[in-house]
Image (cartoon, rainbow, N blue to C red; front, side, top):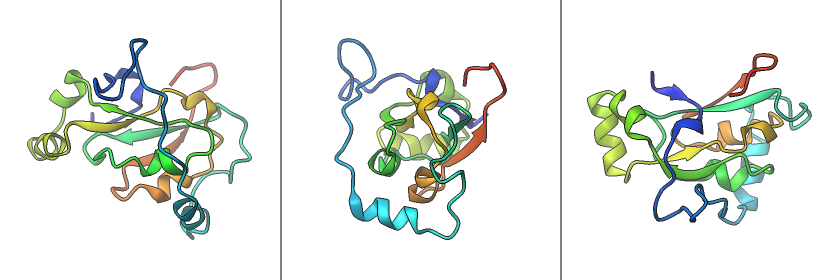
Length: 141
């Protein structure tokens, strides 16, 4: 399955610290945030949902690791990393080639429990690789 949350991914060696996934985020881009906030198709709860009610899911076949989601997320839900070998193996041939061309970079969601369903990430992603899904009660992403 190509649509997964980032909890099964390997951090990028170039982006990781000794403790695992790098939490160093690119500077927020005010122009991208403004553009995403005013997008007419912006889904979600406009940042009014309680943390952890919704969770972003990243389609590994579409994500190219461009980090637009990181630049607009006000809750630092996302990080950039490398797709796991297991998830990479499940991609189609075309998606594998695309992933390799982009250095196997992908968006991770190590802080998905902080998501407040702003929808900024969904409309900011140039590859349309992110959706917001309600979490099942009592279930981790």
